[in-house]
Image (cartoon, rainbow, N blue to C red; front, side, top):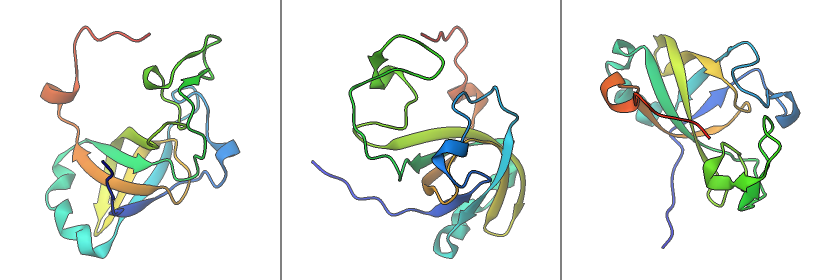
Length: 140
């Protein structure tokens, strides 16, 4: 089974190379960026400014490795790729929760960015506290 996706937009960020992206998100100051939604999808942004945070689904478009085990930058032990946030995955799809600062037409100005400039965006969803926040969740 295979799927084909069409990007709905691009991320514009201060990170022009993969080496410039913070490897430990949350340690570096939150960067701002712009989600540019392509004109043919702009109608889908109706009322998006009613939300404080958004979940962005994107493609790690520069990732060429597909390991099943990785060593995360903040850890020393090897773990399965599905228990990590590594960009190198069998299907290079990622998610990012950002704070929406403002909307100007088909551009969303956001904070909390750690993606490469030009990253293709597959989807945008509103962050909903009653669905997306899980009290008692733990991290490995």
